Length: 252
Picture 1 (tube, one colour):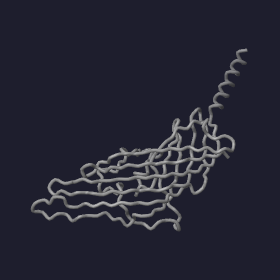
Picture 2 (cartoon, one colour):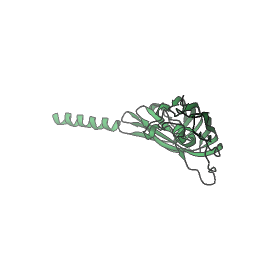
Picture 3 (spheres, helix red, strand yellow):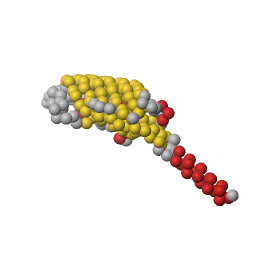
Picture 4 (cartoon, helix red, strand yellow):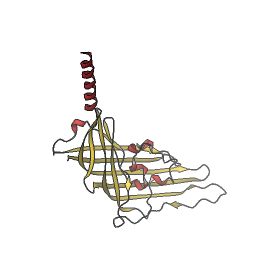
């Protein structure tokens, strides 16, 4: 009898462990988003010779998946499991201007000449975006770093004023704007060159909310930022942004 009880208990433990093991399904994922990030600076710097820095810019684009991509999602030990990437393309415009000019000269010294940031890279833009999904706890984190396009699709290079250039920032640590050192939390919309990437976001998703059968399910999210980065110019650099996206999943 004791042996039977022991085997029964052991069997129950094994069944429980098996039930809590990863139960994941395969899905096709497509993604679309609209994002706009704007920045502005208007302040002075210096103690003897006073310089004024003025500038502003906007990066606005639409992102769409170039094709539906496979992702894996489900339950893992009672927690959400979700992993995958969706190749996408962003198309839009980049605008920006920045000038550093003399405000008050320093007596007896030749003032620095005015400086204007290059803007030959402003205008229409097209770039690749890899939309990454990572589950942590009850949330799916969504990030979107820029990726190279095929040579036939790539845009002509150039520069357009943007805070990441660092010429009017004290630091390129964009933590005040939602960036983080963990890869799955990176906010590429403020931390990458010319803002060509998605703002960091996350959404709550329970395993039971995944689509069943052959049905599709859409998940929408809107996230915003409003932050001021420390700058060598008084008042700092003010950055605002909005990301609105839709993720569509279909069970395979």
